Length: 615
Ligand code: ADP
Ligand code: MG
Picture 1: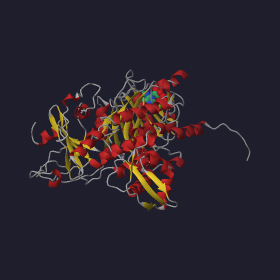
Picture 2: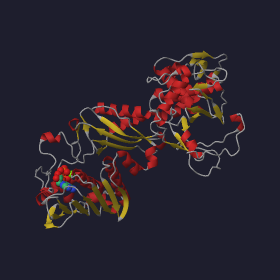
Picture 3: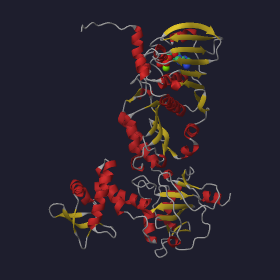
Picture 4: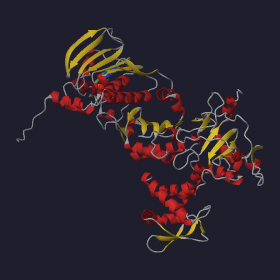
Protein backbone atom coordinates (compact mmCIF):
# COMPACT_ATOMS: atom_id res chain seq x y z
CA UNK A 1 0.00 0.00 0.00
CA UNK A 2 1.25 3.44 -0.88
CA UNK A 3 1.84 5.82 1.92
CA UNK A 4 0.02 8.84 0.51
CA UNK A 5 -0.84 11.44 3.08
CA UNK A 6 -3.98 13.45 2.39
CA UNK A 7 -5.69 16.16 4.39
CA UNK A 8 -9.09 14.86 5.36
CA UNK A 9 -12.15 16.69 4.05
CA UNK A 10 -13.81 18.94 6.60
CA UNK A 11 -16.92 16.83 6.74
CA UNK A 12 -14.93 13.81 7.84
CA UNK A 13 -12.96 15.84 10.36
CA UNK A 14 -16.24 17.00 11.85
CA UNK A 15 -17.46 13.47 12.19
CA UNK A 16 -14.27 12.32 13.82
CA UNK A 17 -14.53 15.16 16.30
CA UNK A 18 -18.22 14.41 16.81
CA UNK A 19 -17.29 10.88 17.75
CA UNK A 20 -15.38 12.20 20.72
CA UNK A 21 -18.03 14.56 21.96
CA UNK A 22 -21.15 12.68 21.00
CA UNK A 23 -21.09 9.10 22.07
CA UNK A 24 -24.78 8.55 22.63
CA UNK A 25 -28.00 10.53 23.00
CA UNK A 26 -27.15 11.36 26.60
CA UNK A 27 -24.01 13.15 25.40
CA UNK A 28 -26.17 15.40 23.24
CA UNK A 29 -28.46 16.15 26.14
CA UNK A 30 -25.42 16.85 28.30
CA UNK A 31 -23.94 19.39 25.89
CA UNK A 32 -27.25 21.12 25.28
CA UNK A 33 -28.15 21.31 28.96
CA UNK A 34 -24.68 22.64 29.77
CA UNK A 35 -25.22 25.36 27.19
CA UNK A 36 -28.57 26.21 28.76
CA UNK A 37 -27.04 26.43 32.22
CA UNK A 38 -24.19 28.58 30.89
CA UNK A 39 -26.83 30.79 29.27
CA UNK A 40 -28.27 31.51 32.71
CA UNK A 41 -31.51 29.59 32.20
CA UNK A 42 -33.93 29.31 35.12
CA UNK A 43 -36.04 26.63 33.46
CA UNK A 44 -34.71 23.78 31.37
CA UNK A 45 -36.94 21.23 29.81
CA UNK A 46 -35.86 18.11 27.95
CA UNK A 47 -38.06 15.97 25.74
CA UNK A 48 -36.91 12.72 24.18
CA UNK A 49 -38.30 10.02 21.95
CA UNK A 50 -36.91 6.53 21.56
CA UNK A 51 -34.20 7.09 24.13
CA UNK A 52 -33.20 10.29 22.37
CA UNK A 53 -32.15 8.52 19.19
CA UNK A 54 -35.19 9.71 17.29
CA UNK A 55 -35.77 13.04 18.96
CA UNK A 56 -34.25 15.33 21.57
CA UNK A 57 -35.50 18.79 22.39
CA UNK A 58 -33.87 21.00 24.99
CA UNK A 59 -35.65 24.25 25.71
CA UNK A 60 -34.34 26.99 27.96
CA UNK A 61 -35.15 30.54 28.99
CA UNK A 62 -31.55 31.71 29.02
CA UNK A 63 -30.02 34.71 27.26
CA UNK A 64 -30.52 33.34 23.75
CA UNK A 65 -28.50 34.30 20.66
CA UNK A 66 -28.85 37.02 18.06
CA UNK A 67 -28.86 36.13 14.38
CA UNK A 68 -25.11 36.43 13.94
CA UNK A 69 -24.23 34.40 17.00
CA UNK A 70 -26.81 31.78 16.16
CA UNK A 71 -24.95 31.08 12.96
CA UNK A 72 -21.49 31.36 14.49
CA UNK A 73 -22.41 28.87 17.19
CA UNK A 74 -22.25 26.10 14.59
CA UNK A 75 -18.71 26.83 13.56
CA UNK A 76 -16.05 24.65 15.04
CA UNK A 77 -14.16 26.27 17.91
CA UNK A 78 -16.66 29.09 18.13
CA UNK A 79 -17.40 29.97 21.71
CA UNK A 80 -18.40 32.97 23.76
CA UNK A 81 -16.94 31.46 26.93
CA UNK A 82 -13.19 31.84 26.64
CA UNK A 83 -11.04 34.34 24.81
CA UNK A 84 -7.49 33.54 25.73
CA UNK A 85 -5.20 30.80 26.94
CA UNK A 86 -5.43 32.27 30.43
CA UNK A 87 -9.17 31.74 30.41
CA UNK A 88 -8.63 28.10 29.56
CA UNK A 89 -6.90 27.64 32.87
CA UNK A 90 -9.62 29.35 34.87
CA UNK A 91 -12.81 27.88 33.47
CA UNK A 92 -15.96 28.95 35.25
CA UNK A 93 -18.51 27.86 32.63
CA UNK A 94 -19.52 24.31 31.82
CA UNK A 95 -18.66 24.65 28.13
CA UNK A 96 -15.53 26.19 26.62
CA UNK A 97 -14.40 24.04 23.72
CA UNK A 98 -16.81 25.46 21.15
CA UNK A 99 -17.24 21.99 19.71
CA UNK A 100 -20.56 20.72 20.89
CA UNK A 101 -22.99 22.36 18.51
CA UNK A 102 -20.98 21.70 15.32
CA UNK A 103 -20.36 18.12 16.44
CA UNK A 104 -23.99 17.41 17.15
CA UNK A 105 -25.08 19.15 13.97
CA UNK A 106 -22.77 17.02 11.86
CA UNK A 107 -24.40 13.75 12.94
CA UNK A 108 -28.09 14.69 12.98
CA UNK A 109 -30.90 16.80 11.65
CA UNK A 110 -30.91 19.85 13.84
CA UNK A 111 -33.19 22.79 14.32
CA UNK A 112 -32.58 25.77 16.53
CA UNK A 113 -34.90 28.54 17.57
CA UNK A 114 -33.48 31.35 19.64
CA UNK A 115 -34.09 34.94 20.70
CA UNK A 116 -32.29 37.36 22.99
CA UNK A 117 -33.88 39.94 25.25
CA UNK A 118 -32.76 42.79 22.98
CA UNK A 119 -34.23 41.41 19.76
CA UNK A 120 -37.86 41.58 18.83
CA UNK A 121 -37.71 38.62 16.53
CA UNK A 122 -35.77 35.43 16.88
CA UNK A 123 -33.76 33.25 14.54
CA UNK A 124 -34.51 29.82 13.20
CA UNK A 125 -31.76 27.66 11.79
CA UNK A 126 -32.16 24.27 10.18
CA UNK A 127 -29.16 22.02 9.61
CA UNK A 128 -28.59 18.67 8.01
CA UNK A 129 -25.43 16.68 8.61
CA UNK A 130 -23.61 19.85 9.60
CA UNK A 131 -24.75 22.08 6.74
CA UNK A 132 -27.11 25.00 7.12
CA UNK A 133 -30.27 24.31 5.13
CA UNK A 134 -32.31 27.28 6.18
CA UNK A 135 -31.92 30.40 8.28
CA UNK A 136 -34.66 32.91 8.82
CA UNK A 137 -35.97 35.44 11.28
CA UNK A 138 -39.05 34.25 13.11
CA UNK A 139 -41.09 34.91 16.19
CA UNK A 140 -39.68 33.07 19.19
CA UNK A 141 -39.89 33.10 22.97
CA UNK A 142 -36.89 34.39 24.90
CA UNK A 143 -34.22 31.74 25.16
CA UNK A 144 -33.17 28.83 23.03
CA UNK A 145 -34.72 25.62 21.90
CA UNK A 146 -32.77 22.96 20.05
CA UNK A 147 -34.22 19.91 18.37
CA UNK A 148 -31.96 17.04 17.36
CA UNK A 149 -33.50 14.34 15.17
CA UNK A 150 -32.23 10.95 13.98
CA UNK A 151 -28.94 11.02 15.77
CA UNK A 152 -26.14 9.27 13.82
CA UNK A 153 -28.40 8.90 10.76
CA UNK A 154 -25.25 9.37 8.68
CA UNK A 155 -22.91 7.32 10.90
CA UNK A 156 -24.47 3.85 10.76
CA UNK A 157 -21.52 2.31 12.61
CA UNK A 158 -22.21 4.49 15.61
CA UNK A 159 -25.93 3.95 15.45
CA UNK A 160 -25.36 0.21 15.63
CA UNK A 161 -23.63 0.58 18.97
CA UNK A 162 -26.53 2.29 20.64
CA UNK A 163 -28.18 0.25 23.32
CA UNK A 164 -31.85 -0.34 23.87
CA UNK A 165 -34.17 2.59 24.23
CA UNK A 166 -34.43 1.83 27.94
CA UNK A 167 -30.69 1.98 28.44
CA UNK A 168 -30.32 5.22 26.52
CA UNK A 169 -33.21 6.73 28.46
CA UNK A 170 -31.57 5.59 31.69
CA UNK A 171 -28.38 7.43 30.73
CA UNK A 172 -30.34 10.60 30.10
CA UNK A 173 -32.16 10.30 33.42
CA UNK A 174 -28.85 9.80 35.26
CA UNK A 175 -27.35 12.77 33.55
CA UNK A 176 -30.23 15.12 34.28
CA UNK A 177 -30.34 13.88 37.84
CA UNK A 178 -26.77 15.02 38.26
CA UNK A 179 -27.43 18.47 36.87
CA UNK A 180 -30.55 18.73 39.00
CA UNK A 181 -28.50 18.02 42.11
CA UNK A 182 -25.85 20.55 41.19
CA UNK A 183 -28.28 23.33 40.24
CA UNK A 184 -31.18 23.42 42.67
CA UNK A 185 -32.01 26.99 41.63
CA UNK A 186 -32.91 25.79 38.13
CA UNK A 187 -36.09 23.89 37.40
CA UNK A 188 -35.57 20.73 35.34
CA UNK A 189 -38.15 18.72 33.49
CA UNK A 190 -37.79 15.49 31.53
CA UNK A 191 -40.41 13.98 29.23
CA UNK A 192 -40.02 10.72 27.35
CA UNK A 193 -42.52 9.71 24.67
CA UNK A 194 -44.76 12.52 25.89
CA UNK A 195 -44.76 11.20 29.46
CA UNK A 196 -43.25 13.21 32.27
CA UNK A 197 -40.37 11.35 33.92
CA UNK A 198 -39.57 14.07 36.39
CA UNK A 199 -40.08 17.74 37.09
CA UNK A 200 -38.07 19.44 39.78
CA UNK A 201 -39.09 22.99 40.46
CA UNK A 202 -36.49 25.52 41.50
CA UNK A 203 -35.73 25.38 45.21
CA UNK A 204 -33.70 27.43 47.64
CA UNK A 205 -31.19 24.84 48.75
CA UNK A 206 -29.37 21.69 47.82
CA UNK A 207 -31.02 20.00 50.80
CA UNK A 208 -34.42 20.53 49.24
CA UNK A 209 -33.29 19.33 45.83
CA UNK A 210 -31.72 16.21 47.31
CA UNK A 211 -35.04 15.46 48.99
CA UNK A 212 -36.85 15.95 45.65
CA UNK A 213 -34.44 13.77 43.74
CA UNK A 214 -33.95 10.90 46.18
CA UNK A 215 -37.07 11.25 48.28
CA UNK A 216 -37.48 12.61 51.79
CA UNK A 217 -36.96 9.20 53.42
CA UNK A 218 -33.66 8.68 51.68
CA UNK A 219 -32.57 12.22 52.42
CA UNK A 220 -33.19 11.62 56.09
CA UNK A 221 -30.90 8.63 55.93
CA UNK A 222 -28.08 10.79 54.70
CA UNK A 223 -25.59 12.64 56.82
CA UNK A 224 -24.46 16.08 55.83
CA UNK A 225 -20.74 16.44 55.54
CA UNK A 226 -19.64 18.79 58.25
CA UNK A 227 -18.39 22.00 56.74
CA UNK A 228 -15.03 23.36 57.59
CA UNK A 229 -12.98 26.35 56.67
CA UNK A 230 -10.65 25.19 53.95
CA UNK A 231 -9.20 26.38 50.70
CA UNK A 232 -11.03 23.52 49.10
CA UNK A 233 -14.62 23.37 50.27
CA UNK A 234 -16.07 19.90 50.53
CA UNK A 235 -19.75 19.53 51.21
CA UNK A 236 -22.34 16.92 50.46
CA UNK A 237 -24.47 14.12 51.73
CA UNK A 238 -23.43 10.63 52.75
CA UNK A 239 -25.87 7.77 52.70
CA UNK A 240 -25.84 5.95 56.00
CA UNK A 241 -24.63 2.37 55.78
CA UNK A 242 -28.24 1.21 56.11
CA UNK A 243 -29.05 2.53 52.63
CA UNK A 244 -25.83 1.44 50.97
CA UNK A 245 -26.52 -0.07 47.53
CA UNK A 246 -25.59 -3.72 46.92
CA UNK A 247 -24.47 -3.73 43.31
CA UNK A 248 -22.25 -0.78 42.80
CA UNK A 249 -21.49 2.56 44.31
CA UNK A 250 -23.89 5.39 43.70
CA UNK A 251 -21.65 8.40 43.68
CA UNK A 252 -22.47 11.89 42.58
CA UNK A 253 -19.30 13.89 42.49
CA UNK A 254 -19.18 17.51 41.43
CA UNK A 255 -16.22 19.76 41.00
CA UNK A 256 -17.26 23.40 40.87
CA UNK A 257 -20.75 22.10 40.11
CA UNK A 258 -19.58 20.05 37.15
CA UNK A 259 -20.54 16.38 37.39
CA UNK A 260 -17.43 14.28 37.00
CA UNK A 261 -16.16 10.76 37.33
CA UNK A 262 -12.90 10.13 39.11
CA UNK A 263 -11.19 6.94 40.19
CA UNK A 264 -9.18 8.73 42.79
CA UNK A 265 -12.21 10.37 44.40
CA UNK A 266 -14.14 7.13 44.17
CA UNK A 267 -11.36 5.55 46.16
CA UNK A 268 -11.39 8.41 48.66
CA UNK A 269 -15.11 7.95 49.26
CA UNK A 270 -14.84 4.19 49.53
CA UNK A 271 -12.04 4.33 52.04
CA UNK A 272 -13.74 7.14 53.92
CA UNK A 273 -16.58 4.74 54.57
CA UNK A 274 -14.11 2.02 55.44
CA UNK A 275 -15.49 -0.62 57.72
CA UNK A 276 -18.77 1.19 58.16
CA UNK A 277 -20.09 -0.52 55.07
CA UNK A 278 -21.33 -4.07 55.46
CA UNK A 279 -19.85 -6.70 53.20
CA UNK A 280 -20.96 -6.40 49.60
CA UNK A 281 -22.30 -2.89 50.11
CA UNK A 282 -21.14 0.22 48.32
CA UNK A 283 -21.23 3.89 49.17
CA UNK A 284 -24.12 6.16 48.23
CA UNK A 285 -22.93 9.71 48.38
CA UNK A 286 -23.21 13.18 46.92
CA UNK A 287 -19.98 15.16 47.12
CA UNK A 288 -19.42 18.75 46.08
CA UNK A 289 -15.90 20.01 45.74
CA UNK A 290 -15.51 23.73 45.39
CA UNK A 291 -12.00 24.64 44.35
CA UNK A 292 -10.20 27.58 42.80
CA UNK A 293 -10.68 27.10 39.02
CA UNK A 294 -6.96 27.73 38.63
CA UNK A 295 -6.18 24.53 40.56
CA UNK A 296 -8.19 22.21 38.39
CA UNK A 297 -7.87 21.33 34.73
CA UNK A 298 -11.22 20.57 33.16
CA UNK A 299 -9.83 20.22 29.66
CA UNK A 300 -8.77 16.60 30.05
CA UNK A 301 -11.48 14.85 28.12
CA UNK A 302 -13.58 15.95 25.12
CA UNK A 303 -16.77 15.25 27.04
CA UNK A 304 -15.40 17.14 30.07
CA UNK A 305 -16.38 14.30 32.38
CA UNK A 306 -12.99 14.04 34.01
CA UNK A 307 -10.83 16.66 35.64
CA UNK A 308 -7.27 16.84 36.81
CA UNK A 309 -6.33 18.54 40.06
CA UNK A 310 -3.09 20.43 40.45
CA UNK A 311 -2.66 18.40 43.61
CA UNK A 312 -4.56 15.16 43.25
CA UNK A 313 -3.42 13.75 46.59
CA UNK A 314 -4.45 16.76 48.64
CA UNK A 315 -7.97 16.60 47.24
CA UNK A 316 -8.16 12.84 47.68
CA UNK A 317 -7.03 13.01 51.28
CA UNK A 318 -9.30 15.89 52.14
CA UNK A 319 -12.35 14.09 50.75
CA UNK A 320 -11.35 10.97 52.64
CA UNK A 321 -10.91 12.79 55.95
CA UNK A 322 -14.08 14.82 55.63
CA UNK A 323 -16.12 11.68 54.95
CA UNK A 324 -14.53 9.72 57.73
CA UNK A 325 -15.11 12.52 60.24
CA UNK A 326 -18.69 13.02 59.21
CA UNK A 327 -19.52 9.33 59.32
CA UNK A 328 -18.13 8.69 62.76
CA UNK A 329 -20.15 11.48 64.31
CA UNK A 330 -22.96 10.47 66.65
CA UNK A 331 -25.33 11.45 63.87
CA UNK A 332 -24.78 8.04 62.33
CA UNK A 333 -26.53 6.40 65.25
CA UNK A 334 -29.68 4.90 63.82
CA UNK A 335 -32.89 5.94 65.45
CA UNK A 336 -36.05 3.99 65.86
CA UNK A 337 -39.05 5.55 64.23
CA UNK A 338 -42.41 4.71 65.66
CA UNK A 339 -45.05 4.57 63.01
CA UNK A 340 -48.47 5.87 63.86
CA UNK A 341 -50.46 2.74 63.27
CA UNK A 342 -52.74 0.47 65.20
CA UNK A 343 -50.93 -0.53 68.34
CA UNK A 344 -51.87 -4.16 68.71
CA UNK A 345 -49.05 -5.65 66.70
CA UNK A 346 -46.24 -7.61 68.31
CA UNK A 347 -43.10 -5.79 69.16
CA UNK A 348 -40.80 -5.94 66.23
CA UNK A 349 -38.29 -3.70 64.67
CA UNK A 350 -36.09 -3.81 61.73
CA UNK A 351 -33.21 -2.00 60.25
CA UNK A 352 -32.83 -2.21 56.54
CA UNK A 353 -29.80 -4.37 56.75
CA UNK A 354 -30.35 -6.29 59.94
CA UNK A 355 -33.85 -7.56 59.84
CA UNK A 356 -34.40 -8.24 63.45
CA UNK A 357 -37.56 -9.28 65.05
CA UNK A 358 -37.91 -10.43 68.55
CA UNK A 359 -40.27 -10.74 71.36
CA UNK A 360 -39.83 -9.81 74.94
CA UNK A 361 -39.53 -12.92 76.99
CA UNK A 362 -40.49 -12.77 80.59
CA UNK A 363 -37.40 -14.57 81.69
CA UNK A 364 -35.06 -12.22 79.96
CA UNK A 365 -36.70 -9.18 81.40
CA UNK A 366 -36.84 -10.87 84.72
CA UNK A 367 -40.33 -9.58 85.35
CA UNK A 368 -43.74 -9.87 83.91
CA UNK A 369 -44.36 -7.84 80.81
CA UNK A 370 -47.57 -5.92 80.92
CA UNK A 371 -50.17 -7.29 78.54
CA UNK A 372 -50.41 -5.65 75.15
CA UNK A 373 -46.82 -4.56 75.09
CA UNK A 374 -47.03 -4.57 71.33
CA UNK A 375 -46.64 -0.88 71.02
CA UNK A 376 -43.66 -0.47 68.86
CA UNK A 377 -44.67 -1.48 65.42
CA UNK A 378 -42.54 -1.63 62.33
CA UNK A 379 -39.83 0.49 63.82
CA UNK A 380 -37.39 1.71 61.29
CA UNK A 381 -34.03 3.31 61.40
CA UNK A 382 -34.60 6.98 61.26
CA UNK A 383 -32.69 10.16 61.28
CA UNK A 384 -32.24 11.81 64.57
CA UNK A 385 -33.07 15.45 65.03
CA UNK A 386 -30.18 17.73 64.25
CA UNK A 387 -28.92 19.45 67.32
CA UNK A 388 -29.26 16.39 69.51
CA UNK A 389 -25.87 15.20 68.51
CA UNK A 390 -24.29 16.21 71.77
CA UNK A 391 -26.45 13.98 73.82
CA UNK A 392 -24.47 10.82 73.45
CA UNK A 393 -21.22 12.45 74.26
CA UNK A 394 -22.83 14.16 77.16
CA UNK A 395 -24.26 10.90 78.33
CA UNK A 396 -20.96 9.17 78.06
CA UNK A 397 -19.22 11.96 79.82
CA UNK A 398 -21.70 12.26 82.60
CA UNK A 399 -22.28 8.61 83.10
CA UNK A 400 -18.80 7.30 82.64
CA UNK A 401 -16.60 10.14 83.61
CA UNK A 402 -15.14 10.85 80.20
CA UNK A 403 -14.89 14.59 80.47
CA UNK A 404 -15.92 16.64 77.49
CA UNK A 405 -13.63 19.44 76.43
CA UNK A 406 -16.61 21.75 76.65
CA UNK A 407 -16.73 21.05 80.34
CA UNK A 408 -20.25 19.69 80.23
CA UNK A 409 -19.25 16.29 81.49
CA UNK A 410 -19.05 17.19 85.12
CA UNK A 411 -18.50 13.83 86.73
CA UNK A 412 -19.17 14.99 90.22
CA UNK A 413 -22.72 13.82 89.69
CA UNK A 414 -21.62 10.27 89.11
CA UNK A 415 -22.73 7.83 91.69
CA UNK A 416 -20.94 4.62 91.00
CA UNK A 417 -22.66 2.28 93.31
CA UNK A 418 -21.00 -1.05 92.86
CA UNK A 419 -23.71 -3.09 94.45
CA UNK A 420 -26.72 -1.71 92.66
CA UNK A 421 -24.78 -0.99 89.49
CA UNK A 422 -26.77 2.09 88.85
CA UNK A 423 -25.20 5.04 87.21
CA UNK A 424 -26.57 8.43 87.65
CA UNK A 425 -26.70 11.44 85.43
CA UNK A 426 -28.08 14.46 87.19
CA UNK A 427 -29.75 12.18 89.66
CA UNK A 428 -31.31 10.00 86.98
CA UNK A 429 -30.58 6.34 87.56
CA UNK A 430 -29.32 4.32 84.66
CA UNK A 431 -30.15 0.66 84.62
CA UNK A 432 -29.39 -2.05 82.16
CA UNK A 433 -31.77 -4.74 81.04
CA UNK A 434 -31.19 -7.66 78.77
CA UNK A 435 -33.78 -8.53 76.19
CA UNK A 436 -33.94 -12.06 74.79
CA UNK A 437 -30.35 -12.51 75.98
CA UNK A 438 -29.42 -10.61 72.85
CA UNK A 439 -30.02 -6.92 73.34
CA UNK A 440 -29.07 -4.57 76.10
CA UNK A 441 -31.57 -1.88 76.91
CA UNK A 442 -30.50 1.25 78.62
CA UNK A 443 -31.18 4.88 78.92
CA UNK A 444 -29.34 7.73 77.31
CA UNK A 445 -30.56 11.02 78.66
CA UNK A 446 -34.26 10.73 77.84
CA UNK A 447 -33.80 8.17 75.12
CA UNK A 448 -34.07 4.43 75.13
CA UNK A 449 -30.90 2.81 73.86
CA UNK A 450 -30.85 -0.66 72.42
CA UNK A 451 -27.49 -2.35 71.93
CA UNK A 452 -26.89 -5.52 70.02
CA UNK A 453 -24.58 -7.22 72.52
CA UNK A 454 -22.67 -9.24 69.96
CA UNK A 455 -22.25 -6.42 67.44
CA UNK A 456 -21.22 -3.95 70.13
CA UNK A 457 -18.70 -6.32 71.66
CA UNK A 458 -17.38 -7.14 68.21
CA UNK A 459 -16.70 -3.47 67.58
CA UNK A 460 -14.88 -3.11 70.89
CA UNK A 461 -12.74 -6.19 70.35
CA UNK A 462 -12.06 -5.34 66.73
CA UNK A 463 -10.52 -2.01 67.64
CA UNK A 464 -8.58 -3.61 70.46
CA UNK A 465 -7.29 -6.31 68.12
CA UNK A 466 -6.24 -3.72 65.57
CA UNK A 467 -4.21 -1.98 68.22
CA UNK A 468 -2.65 -5.26 69.33
CA UNK A 469 -1.80 -6.19 65.77
CA UNK A 470 -0.24 -2.89 64.89
CA UNK A 471 1.07 -1.47 68.16
CA UNK A 472 1.32 -3.38 71.38
CA UNK A 473 0.75 -7.14 71.37
CA UNK A 474 -2.07 -8.38 73.58
CA UNK A 475 -1.58 -10.04 76.93
CA UNK A 476 -1.96 -13.83 77.10
CA UNK A 477 -3.27 -16.23 79.63
CA UNK A 478 -1.83 -19.74 79.92
CA UNK A 479 -4.12 -22.61 79.07
CA UNK A 480 -4.30 -24.96 82.07
CA UNK A 481 -4.72 -28.18 80.15
CA UNK A 482 -3.62 -27.58 76.57
CA UNK A 483 -4.73 -30.23 74.12
CA UNK A 484 -2.78 -31.35 71.06
CA UNK A 485 -4.80 -30.75 67.95
CA UNK A 486 -4.47 -31.44 64.23
CA UNK A 487 -5.21 -28.57 61.90
CA UNK A 488 -6.69 -29.14 58.45
CA UNK A 489 -4.35 -28.33 55.56
CA UNK A 490 -6.36 -25.13 54.95
CA UNK A 491 -6.13 -24.05 58.58
CA UNK A 492 -2.47 -24.91 58.76
CA UNK A 493 -1.71 -22.92 55.65
CA UNK A 494 -3.49 -19.88 57.09
CA UNK A 495 -1.73 -20.25 60.41
CA UNK A 496 1.58 -20.53 58.63
CA UNK A 497 0.90 -17.34 56.75
CA UNK A 498 -0.35 -15.34 59.73
CA UNK A 499 1.40 -16.88 62.71
CA UNK A 500 3.34 -13.76 63.61
CA UNK A 501 0.13 -11.73 63.72
CA UNK A 502 -1.85 -14.41 65.50
CA UNK A 503 0.72 -14.42 68.27
CA UNK A 504 0.28 -10.69 68.64
CA UNK A 505 -3.37 -11.33 69.45
CA UNK A 506 -2.27 -13.31 72.50
CA UNK A 507 -2.13 -16.88 71.20
CA UNK A 508 0.88 -19.04 71.90
CA UNK A 509 1.30 -22.05 69.70
CA UNK A 510 3.77 -24.91 69.80
CA UNK A 511 4.42 -27.01 66.73
CA UNK A 512 4.74 -30.77 66.88
CA UNK A 513 5.64 -31.43 63.29
CA UNK A 514 3.20 -31.79 60.43
CA UNK A 515 -0.09 -30.10 61.10
CA UNK A 516 -0.12 -30.93 64.80
CA UNK A 517 -0.06 -27.99 67.19
CA UNK A 518 -0.57 -27.22 70.86
CA UNK A 519 -2.22 -23.97 71.90
CA UNK A 520 -0.55 -23.13 75.19
CA UNK A 521 -1.81 -19.60 75.72
CA UNK A 522 -4.86 -17.63 74.58
CA UNK A 523 -5.67 -13.92 74.66
CA UNK A 524 -6.64 -12.73 78.16
CA UNK A 525 -10.35 -12.45 78.58
CA UNK A 526 -11.07 -15.51 76.45
CA UNK A 527 -14.18 -17.02 77.95
CA UNK A 528 -15.23 -20.66 78.21
CA UNK A 529 -13.29 -21.84 75.25
CA UNK A 530 -10.47 -24.24 74.78
CA UNK A 531 -7.50 -22.74 73.01
CA UNK A 532 -7.49 -25.13 70.08
CA UNK A 533 -11.18 -24.61 69.33
CA UNK A 534 -10.78 -20.84 69.53
CA UNK A 535 -7.80 -20.93 67.16
CA UNK A 536 -9.66 -23.10 64.68
CA UNK A 537 -12.65 -20.73 64.76
CA UNK A 538 -10.47 -17.73 64.09
CA UNK A 539 -8.69 -19.50 61.22
CA UNK A 540 -11.83 -20.63 59.51
CA UNK A 541 -13.37 -17.17 59.84
CA UNK A 542 -10.17 -15.70 58.48
CA UNK A 543 -10.50 -17.76 55.37
CA UNK A 544 -13.88 -16.15 54.70
CA UNK A 545 -12.92 -12.65 55.72
CA UNK A 546 -9.92 -12.60 53.44
CA UNK A 547 -12.14 -13.13 50.45
CA UNK A 548 -13.66 -9.72 51.14
CA UNK A 549 -11.16 -7.82 53.22
CA UNK A 550 -7.89 -7.40 51.36
CA UNK A 551 -6.11 -5.90 54.34
CA UNK A 552 -4.61 -8.87 56.20
CA UNK A 553 -4.53 -7.14 59.56
CA UNK A 554 -8.13 -6.00 59.37
CA UNK A 555 -9.29 -9.41 58.20
CA UNK A 556 -7.60 -11.07 61.14
CA UNK A 557 -8.93 -8.48 63.59
CA UNK A 558 -12.45 -9.08 62.28
CA UNK A 559 -12.09 -12.85 62.53
CA UNK A 560 -10.82 -12.59 66.06
CA UNK A 561 -13.47 -10.10 67.17
CA UNK A 562 -16.24 -12.21 65.70
CA UNK A 563 -15.31 -15.31 67.70
CA UNK A 564 -14.11 -13.66 70.86
CA UNK A 565 -17.22 -11.53 71.23
CA UNK A 566 -20.19 -12.29 73.43
CA UNK A 567 -22.78 -14.16 71.38
CA UNK A 568 -26.45 -13.47 71.02
CA UNK A 569 -28.19 -15.70 73.53
CA UNK A 570 -25.62 -15.29 76.30
CA UNK A 571 -26.98 -14.11 79.61
CA UNK A 572 -25.09 -11.09 80.97
CA UNK A 573 -24.99 -9.64 84.43
CA UNK A 574 -25.30 -5.94 85.25
CA UNK A 575 -21.58 -5.45 85.42
CA UNK A 576 -20.98 -7.02 82.03
CA UNK A 577 -23.71 -4.93 80.47
CA UNK A 578 -22.41 -1.74 81.99
CA UNK A 579 -18.94 -2.56 80.81
CA UNK A 580 -20.11 -3.10 77.29
CA UNK A 581 -22.07 0.14 77.15
CA UNK A 582 -19.22 2.06 78.65
CA UNK A 583 -16.64 0.63 76.29
CA UNK A 584 -18.64 0.93 73.11
CA UNK A 585 -18.76 4.70 73.52
CA UNK A 586 -15.00 4.87 73.75
CA UNK A 587 -14.46 3.20 70.39
CA UNK A 588 -13.72 5.14 67.27
CA UNK A 589 -16.78 4.02 65.36
CA UNK A 590 -19.29 3.10 68.04
CA UNK A 591 -22.35 2.87 65.83
CA UNK A 592 -21.52 -0.07 63.65
CA UNK A 593 -19.82 -3.40 64.03
CA UNK A 594 -16.76 -4.23 61.89
CA UNK A 595 -19.06 -5.78 59.31
CA UNK A 596 -21.19 -2.68 59.14
CA UNK A 597 -24.25 -3.80 61.08
CA UNK A 598 -25.56 -1.27 63.57
CA UNK A 599 -24.51 -1.73 67.19
CA UNK A 600 -26.91 0.72 68.76
CA UNK A 601 -30.33 2.05 67.96
CA UNK A 602 -32.25 4.65 69.83
CA UNK A 603 -35.87 5.43 70.60
CA UNK A 604 -36.38 9.03 71.57
CA UNK A 605 -38.67 10.38 74.20
CA UNK A 606 -40.31 12.35 71.45
CA UNK A 607 -41.24 9.21 69.58
CA UNK A 608 -42.59 7.66 72.75
CA UNK A 609 -44.63 10.74 73.52
CA UNK A 610 -46.03 10.71 70.04
CA UNK A 611 -46.96 7.09 70.37
CA UNK A 612 -48.74 7.65 73.65
CA UNK A 613 -50.54 10.67 72.31
CA UNK A 614 -48.73 13.20 74.51
CA UNK A 615 -48.04 16.22 72.44
P1 ADP B 1 -19.18 25.97 24.11
O1 ADP B 1 -20.33 25.68 25.00
O2 ADP B 1 -18.01 25.15 24.41
O3 ADP B 1 -18.88 27.43 24.03
P2 ADP B 1 -20.92 25.08 22.03
O4 ADP B 1 -20.68 24.54 20.68
O5 ADP B 1 -21.65 24.21 22.98
O6 ADP B 1 -19.57 25.54 22.63
O7 ADP B 1 -21.74 26.42 21.89
C1 ADP B 1 -21.18 27.48 21.13
C2 ADP B 1 -21.70 28.83 21.60
O8 ADP B 1 -23.08 28.93 21.31
C3 ADP B 1 -21.62 29.03 23.09
O9 ADP B 1 -20.36 29.54 23.46
C4 ADP B 1 -22.73 30.04 23.35
O10 ADP B 1 -22.28 31.34 23.13
C5 ADP B 1 -23.74 29.71 22.28
N1 ADP B 1 -24.84 28.89 22.80
C6 ADP B 1 -24.98 27.56 22.68
N2 ADP B 1 -26.12 27.13 23.27
C7 ADP B 1 -26.71 28.23 23.79
C8 ADP B 1 -27.93 28.44 24.53
N3 ADP B 1 -28.74 27.45 24.87
N4 ADP B 1 -28.23 29.71 24.89
C9 ADP B 1 -27.40 30.73 24.57
N5 ADP B 1 -26.27 30.58 23.87
C10 ADP B 1 -25.91 29.36 23.49
MG1 MG C 1 -21.33 23.92 25.05
